[in-house]
Image 1 (cartoon, rainbow, N blue to C red):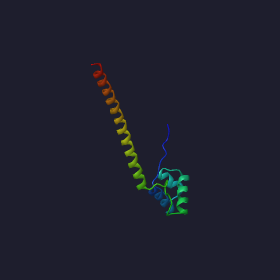
Image 2 (tube, rainbow, N blue to C red; image 1 turned 120 degrees about the horizontal axis):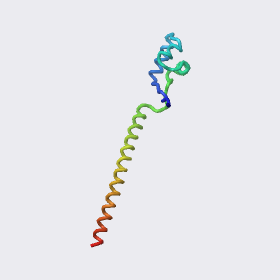
Image 3 (tube, rainbow, N blue to C red; image 1 turned 180 degrees about the vertical axis):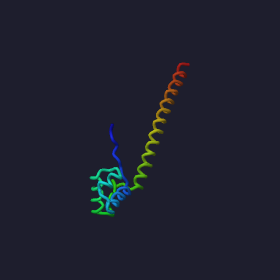
Image 4 (cartoon, one colour; image 1 turned 30 degrees about the vertical axis):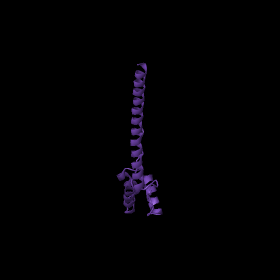
Length: 106
């Protein structure tokens, strides 16, 4: 069975680092937050190097992420509408062809 990769928020990472900075052992903090000690150490190092810009994420802000989600929903809806319209058009063409054949045979 495949494990899904967990994603941690900036706030969660800062909370872990704060626990370590308050004197808690890295291993103990990692155990409490159910992460690996090496990950906790990595977060602490990243935070120590640049507290202001630590844990910036993948470069997409939440407003950009919301806009992307909205556009993906619109694309999905348009895809469904196009599929429906193609089916309707096919059905209308078939009906038209049948009607025309009936009129030609009279």
